Amino acid sequence: MIYWLLFWTFFKIGAVSFGGGYAMIPLIQEELEALGWMDAEEFANILAISEMTPGPLATNTATYVGAKTTGVLGSMAATLGVTLPSLIIITLVARFFIQFKENKMVNSILQTIRPITIGLIFSAVVFISQTSLLKSKIELPGFFDVLKGNLSGIINSIQPDFAGIAIFIIILVAIAKYKLNPILAIMSSALLGIASYLMFGV
Image 1: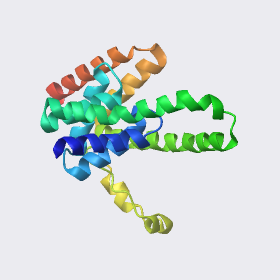
Image 2: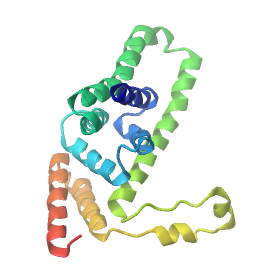
Image 3: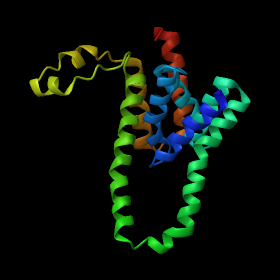
Image 4: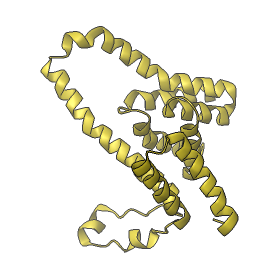
């Protein structure tokens, strides 16, 4: 049943995603592509929409995917699935963490989770960069290709999207130097994208 599949898919994602919404991005992308619900470009568009709307990124993404797949009931199933693990875990933490916060094993587990979170977020950065700053996915070399220094595949697959790169640099400077409000940054990016399309067709 599609509603159960939506619920279970996002429940699994919510249960193993530590570090917030951005850490969930590679997991959500992998599941959606495996199930054939959407491709990388469409998923990147969903992320942009999710960032522009109020609420957590993961919840917004789950709601959108569910609605696109089967309508309102699908959005409810996906949203419940992605939020339920956090509700369960936080309830357990609130109940038991105070008792075990000095436990060496608990602290060791938490220390192990932190670098995993960094890896997941970095993976999300790579995915968003490929869909926003490049015209196509990078063909990553195999392990033995790297050892042999055979990197021609990855070099040949890099096709920069100069319009996207220019917009990225402009917004990055505006945020870093002039503390541009994130909402204004998103709106400015959209306007620059429209201008780029009207002027250059890209």
